[in-house]
Image (tube, rainbow, N blue to C red; front, side, top):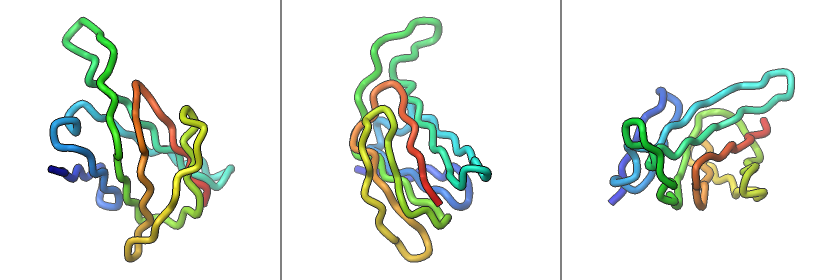
Length: 106
């Protein structure tokens, strides 16, 4: 089963329902470099004051209403396919360990 989490009115992240709660995301625009950074933090290893290795998350789809043409996952060292979905663009992060940054070139 999939669940949608609305980060803001222009962003939708789709992930497996049982893994959505420990997923944190943040968008950061870098206008001088004409790009947007999407930070993913897998919080599944956090338990109060203890920390354990996070559960690997897979196939996290993100839709954004901004005109990016290229998506690159830095830690995975992988370019991600970009698909138009109406006025939005979608990319899918194939796997998330503890942390990932996806660079969206505008």
